[in-house]
Image 1 (cartoon, one colour):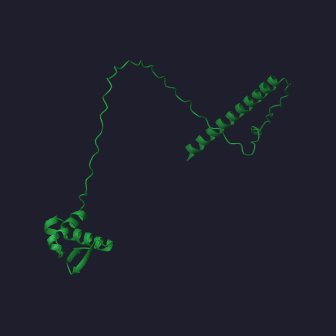
Image 2: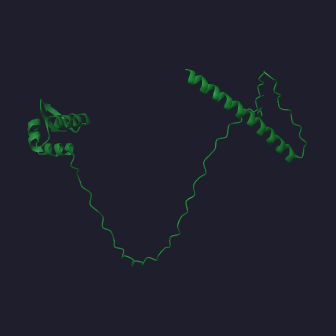
Image 3: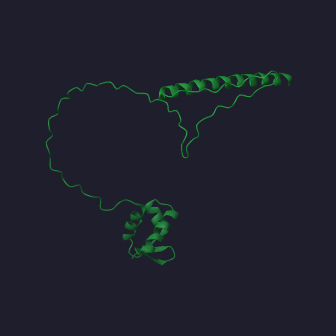
Length: 169
């Protein structure tokens, strides 16, 4: 604890010394500024030391900030990158390709979605088809087939004849 107190005393002495130096430097800066402006400068006398009494140094005065003025932060300088000059070499030109007439591409008549697969299978059964027959021939599972049949019946593409038997509408 005693060591801490001694350290604090040493730090406070250093702070006082620094504040005195700061006062001196600010006075010199004021003189230089006013001399540059062409005005004569009067300096205030430094506080006199009285035997046995400690005199506190007056805090350095700073100019009041304007309302709305913001502190300016130091911005690091941008590094400039020098770009190398690249010489362009002449590329040999290719002979122009002959233009040929394009033939129209035939579009696929029916896409191979599971729904289309089930509907094309149902075309071959005029009296109706069961879910088990569709499952065997299409390779789809029960859930897929029941979803397809439900959607198609809502859209009006197929109709239900009886339980588990469907026919194209």
